[in-house]
Length: 368
Image (cartoon, rainbow, N blue to C red):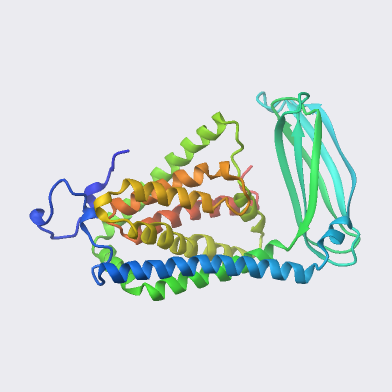
């Protein structure tokens, strides 16, 4: 893929003879002109260690809180009883591409003596040959004793549904995970900015001087992300994969019509997540490669790690395809902008903000 804005990020007033014409501007600049290579490598390693330790600590804390709240998970699970779960296949004339409908119903009763943070039910649909033709998930927060998660839905398929299978369980509430993730992400982002303040300050000065080029890079980068996601969607369709990861489902479950929740999600997903992820997956990972190696390997490696990290917790690794493609674009934008972290953070912010608006629009019924 060629760089449509390769020359937009040259330092203002730099003589044309300052570097060979064949050397991309991103490769001619140091990682941080305020620091030497040795100190930069040490700082990058420190940021990486903090990021990894943060992930370990937050996961240990979540498991600890879970087992404090539910000391005997097996007994709690046994106390969730599915009742009147059934499906009724029928024909549908609403969509020629999906002529088969299923009316799904059931409830999952909390017969425990404690309030459950969340109860969920996952359904899998099969055709007459036993092939999986679709899945659907339902959940509800705050299920008190003797209350239930009610499932009532109409689903459409391109082939007839012959049978279903379902699984159910419980977890902490989505509000709990939102609070934990917000505290973790915001804390790590602030630590990164404090420890690497010289780099952030230098890139901010550079961005202010070349703000029109930076905005152009952000817009062009978001267009490239959109193209990458379309391509990844086509690839996944050809592979027979669904286009929805557990990571996306988890994020979607956190949205509710509460200004505090939406403000927290905006800050976490749109503001602080780009700071953390672009610092680690672009600034730090790129910094470990000598410039003489070029940009290809850092772009590919950072994109691959970026994609896998988004699905590793749930193990649905094939769903990493769109994240990996997005990571390749982020890496390319970072390199082609002269390793300006604000440009790639801007692309990341814009992409997450568009997704945020789509979730909010769906939440308030503005989307079908």
